[in-house]
Image (cartoon, rainbow, N blue to C red; front, side, top):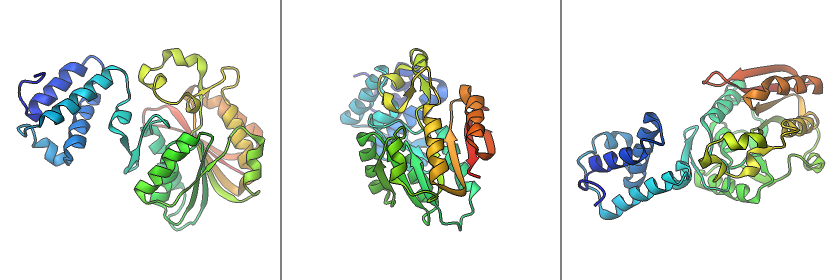
Length: 291
């Protein structure tokens, strides 16, 4: 036996001991809690009172397999197969990036910018798992929301999420860097465009965590070192053509290129530009308006 006994208390101690060198105290606490709750279908309150509950042999083996996979640098969200995002349970696997907490802040900004009564036409460019589009649709059922991505794998995952969440969002194939993208949408037809595009220069790859580089799709992460703003330029030009007058464009951005991105958008002619920090104090979000 790799645990003292079959209790949840012993399983917690085993996971914490094996993983303590690899995660912070808060991360480890969350991993242990979510692993046990996922396996046993426990609510947070039930988990708090569960230390003396006994686990089956298969339960213990399941928790040990999670430990082994984490020690091999596999992302926890891929192991469990889901993550929380804006009060939704988003299915996650290697077909798309794992939704991040800072992206929730972007969604909340969009939702608070518009009144609840407004019916809008919204496009999420580089939608990935569909988390942004689905969160916006969940918060605003009267909005017409679409998601677009070049990856067929990501689009399939996004469609699966829409079915699981029973949300009506259309997910379409499209290349954000293609001039032909503009032919897919009529001029002045959209109220809002949002995008969390690839923005990490390839040179930064060697400084990133192994669990990201080895498992999450590079196509959704990296851009050429010589042109790190390539997606922002193309999506902004597309937005100027397809947004209605005074329509909005929301970006998640690389904190190190915040000023460069801001200057590019001013040059392109956007107005009422607002740069916003995330909860960690990093410049990570941009609001732009078409004149």
